[in-house]
Picture 1: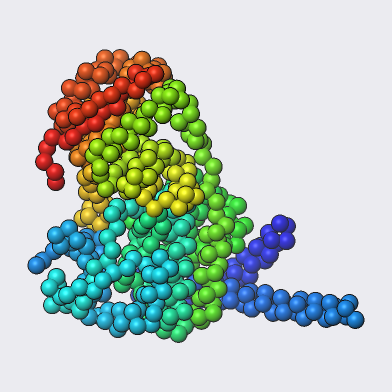
Picture 2: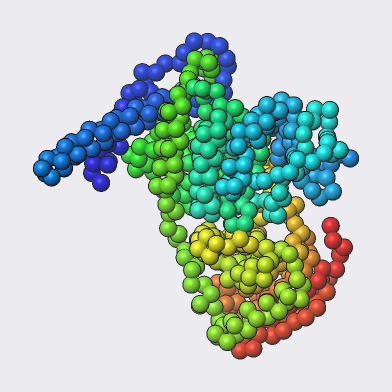
Length: 75
Length: 461
């Protein structure tokens, strides 16, 4: 539970920082409040995508070592 | 033959729904030709229909065509009672939300995506949520932005979060805001602890900030790209967030309401038997059960193959009814949250986008059991007005009269200063006879309550 809250807080900090750095870009179309949703989804989805990659990568490392440990035990 | 255009579908340039001789059709405009072909030829349509996610349809000839713009006409399977998100309990809204995301994921597998994420595109059919807008799909272009995101947050995440963290009654904000609850409003109403929840912090609080920040700013729409893998991560996260939301406990739990009424076990059994007999006599295809509580009497009808809309104004009763329906895999009952003394009005553009309750009737028959005292005493409604309303919404009526000396009535009168001299059986019968023919009335033995079977006097709509 504590770990989950900790991860949550870290995520929130990362997201807030990315969000503050991202600036409205060049001038083309006049968009309604929906534009905020479009910009935001790109930032959020990128973060979630990266987190997903890290999670997958981490799982691979764990399973790699697990396999090695297991095979050594069998020997 | 020109039919009547359905007011709810005017926004979509790709087509619209219309009624012709009581049958619902959907016209597809040429602008949607390629997308429709992709929907059918990619196998997406078949998969969606097989999974029960999308309403099936048949293509019909062009004789129904509405204008020169028509490319095809389809006839979707009819939904017998249209309901709206502000009439759903928490679990119904949650199911509709999860269905929208499942559909989006399936669409991506077939090279398509949803065009919007409106909760009004979802209806309940045979006890399950289903997408009714066949024209909701478009070809997916790699890295395109995902337009349904805003609606999914406003129509689903915001009300579900408010119902979960603040108060279940806040779903009624959907009745005020037709395009979903504005995120800045949801953000200000939600308690601080939702900011510590990553999902809600981002999809509501930060999302609302982003909307404010970019409102009235000129930005390049084409400058932003959303990778497919990132889009899938976003959808997965929305699913996790929605799955994690639980309905907030109620301040009043009426779950034992049936048990504490003034019936003996024998009287209660007799009441069930009477309702069953009257239903068999009318033999309707569908009924409305008003003040249904958690649907005990709706179930008597549904077991006879009758379709029932089971209305109650108490959220926990509707939630309980829906849970029971899910447990029994009930296909005939649709639990609906509705306050009879303030039923859903016609809302949206021209007051026509979403129908009022009365527009969705009349029902073949209505069950009005253990309700009249609530209307007449607790809400000061004269019998004549109650009868007038009921004659507006049903052709047959099975109604229970509860006499003044009944403990339930006594309880209601105790807290009121008025003397309800007009609350008696003879006035009840006299006033109702203006609108209905009393076909039968039977006193439930072991109690003084009376069950009536009535037939409406004026001609049907």
